Length: 177
Image (tube, rainbow, N blue to C red; front, side):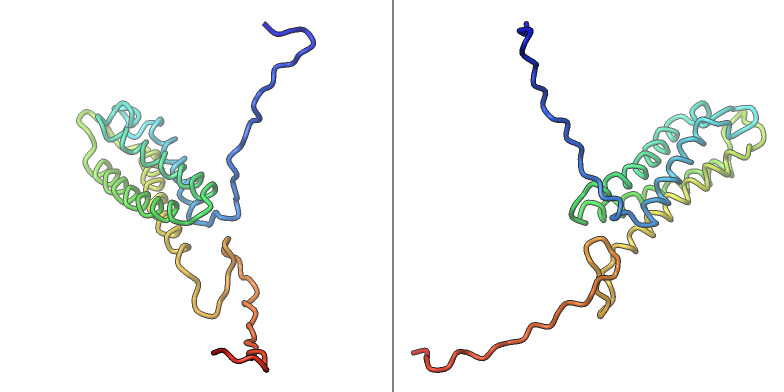
């Protein structure tokens, strides 16, 4: 029980620092495409069979994980201070996006048993999977070091060139022995 004059102290809520300046076009493309892929899984892909959740056995979960990884790429890149983790995630999301694209193409060419014609949402799923792969590739490209002579700061925008350091001669009168 608390005494009436005493307030309970709560620990301060700390928010992980996100720096949106770290995000490039690739991360935004991958995240938006991942959202599109996730939405497409809930809509009907085929006329009779229904949504991807109803039509696929395990592939729907794999596609949902790829979509979630694409959205997580945006968060990871914005929260990590060093580029090692986002670069590794870029490559993994790119590979997963390529695999998801192959899966969606196979499902477009060979629909499941009992499925009628294809719906337009199948195209949205394909665009989402392609977007995840493309966004990951663009994000990996953005992580390359700048070309020689083009100086950038940690966030990527051009920075002024580093100042030249003049060397000074040693002081006169004292000699090292």
